[in-house]
Image 1 (tube, helix red, strand yellow):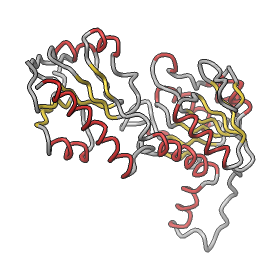
Image 2 (image 1 turned 90 degrees about the horizontal axis):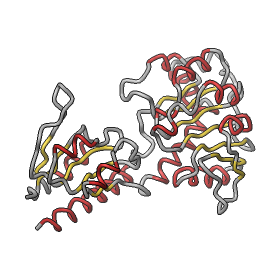
Image 3 (image 1 turned 120 degrees about the horizontal axis):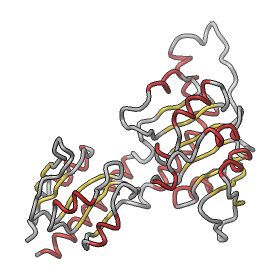
Image 4 (image 1 turned 90 degrees about the vertical axis):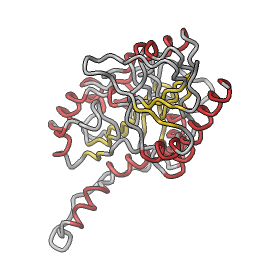
Length: 305
């Protein structure tokens, strides 16, 4: 029998989400044991996770009465969807509400990296302006953006980029005949034609380390990599090597292979803009995400009574 009113929290969640849910439900934190197993928790109908933490089949086995996995975030690559379907467990994530903000952030990273906005800010703050001239940055207008993954976020980046005077190309598993942008099947070819290579594709095995040394060489010394997708999509060792050799012009990174303990080698590069997986974090999006999760949880408990 489902324990109505209890939400099992299986990973660290933001304070605003915890505060909102704890006002309505009893939150019970639940972590893996040191041996990597999950303790059995019968009676739990709702588990709360994030796209970065996910939910595996072992967790579902430990929760025999589970009806809902509520996931903060869009990505579902770390949730065993087949296991959830086999057990009749609904998975509710938070798509759409973060699309515009994430796409805005991708555009912002293009400007921040190409126009050296962070470097220029540091130049002023360090008191260097009265005595030095800062080196030039790179123009954005009139350039070509190559988008890897033309889903909701990718299409929104494309729309915004086109409005700013950029030519848009894209790659993905297949061409989309209903869009007006040119499809480039091979990511290496896309990188060779792009000034800005923007990653908006899902994570998971199919895209793991897709952006490797070959892609970065094709992007070239005038090209910039922007990642608002998943850290796993980029071979970070290859990226660091390309940056050290000046094989690419720079990178704007909102996601990393390991978060929040990312490779600190990135800190030494002035031509890299680093962000704390921040693309969707606006007041407006946070409110919408919390609302979607509250709705899914309320529906599940309503069905259990």
